[in-house]
Image 1 (cartoon, one colour):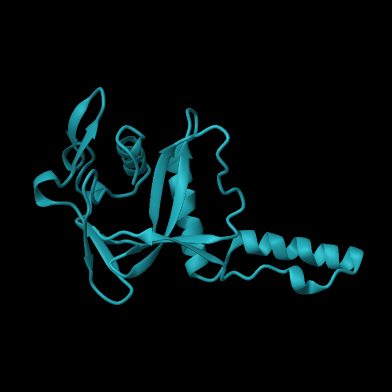
Image 2: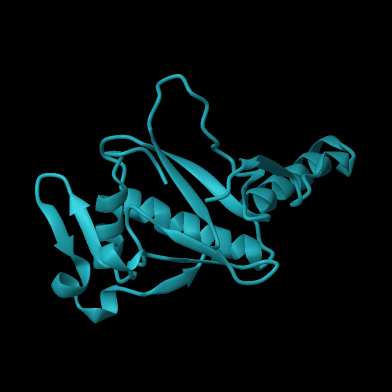
Length: 177
C-alpha cells in the first residue's frame, strides 16, 4: 500500500527478480475465505500487468515467465510505503505489533518510510520473514529486551517486572475494501 509514485511497483519488480511471485499491482481484490484468512488476487483485466514510470506498462508473465506470477495468495501482512518525513518518529524496535482490520480480520501491518538509497525489496523481504517468525512464536525485539533485562537484573539486582510481553498490540482503524 502507499500513495502513487512511492515505489510500490518498482519494489514488486525487484522482488520478482529475487524469486518472488507477483499476485497483483495497483488493485487487489480481497476475499474472506475463513474466520482467520483473507486471500488477495488481481482483477482479471489487469492481471500480470505493472506500470513502471519511464517505461510504461509491462507484462510480468511475458517478461519473467510463468514462474514469476501467481493468481492468488493469503494475505498475512500489510506493508504501507510512505515518503520519509524528517522529524517523524518511526518504529525502530518492533516491540509493539500493529494491525489493520480488514473484513473483520486483524492483519499485521507495518509502515516503511521510503528514502533514496534504501533497498525496499530487501526491507520488505526481511519484514515478511520477521512476520513469519512472529507467527511461529519468536519475536527478536522481545528476545533482545529480555536478554538486556536479564543482564540488568543480574548486575543491578533489578526485579524481573520490566520484562516485555510479546502480546503488546496496536490496532489501526478499520478498513474494508
